[in-house]
Length: 432
Image 1: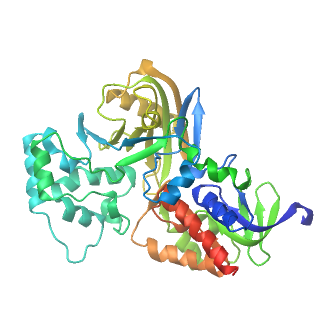
Image 2: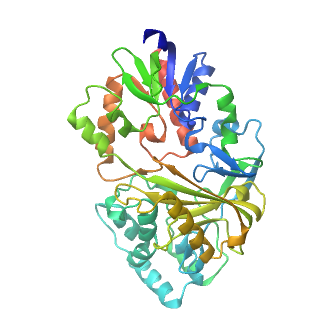
């Protein structure tokens, strides 16, 4: 076995955005590293793929970072299309500009009145206990029950009261009464989408933005880490090979350490099992053209319609409404297990999108469905204690952690890059 174990200075597990960023910043400091990636290609959830000339991403991606350093790294040698993020919402046959509470004009009078009455009389909680109370305090009870609570069940796969609220930040726009009243009477309302100005590669998928970091990293793919021996500083891979390391940076999802680290206590295992996440069923469609809908990014509130949201990578690249790459996301979790096969999800999604007049069946040239085990972190009330327990274990074992699933946090692309940078800076500081 000894001959099968390589020796490396810094080993990084995972070639997603955070792992690539850690490698990039270590190299800038003159420290060599090797990334071991379990999949056949680097990129993590930021990978792209092409089918018959249509390109797709693994989930909805664009860049709207305000960090100039991050933008420069991502956009080196990549021509990006800049656009304004305008989303729409679909519910029971109506298309409503995003966010709904600022665009009530197209709703029936009775529903407008119900939203406005509850918005004006929304409650105030001295000690907010959960996300449902956050929603009610921000928007009122009627709007909460008929819009974000529905979407929460589809996107987060749980009831709003199961979530705590620290994750919300700018992700949910908090309107004032003037904005809500104006949108109840006028169609022309300001765009207040949290990402507003977005950038996306003109030719190719989101993965192009990672090429600068990929080129500057040493990456070994098809290397799925299955065991970490921190006492002897070795990692074993599923193919029977291994590596000996001096320093380890890991982007491994925290629950996976149950089977990777030896001598874990029952308390630590319970903490790992209690960290919750959604899984993604991604339906990708190549279309000759798209229907007469108001936007190519939209959120779907009807619970009987499987996808929570849909978007077009080709539209984000500025390609117009023909030869469209359209993707739809369906989410599952231990709280909402998948009841259908992947093919059944794909076929039902296609029928439902046709029923929404997004496209016609004869326009479909490509259809594909894929599954990703780890999609979004679910912020249940016990997340912070459980996360801290696992992070303390990693620190005790000398493992630096990074990324959405290493930090176990709601990180966008630029935040994941900065997470990888932080891990690299910790390594650099420890060597001074």
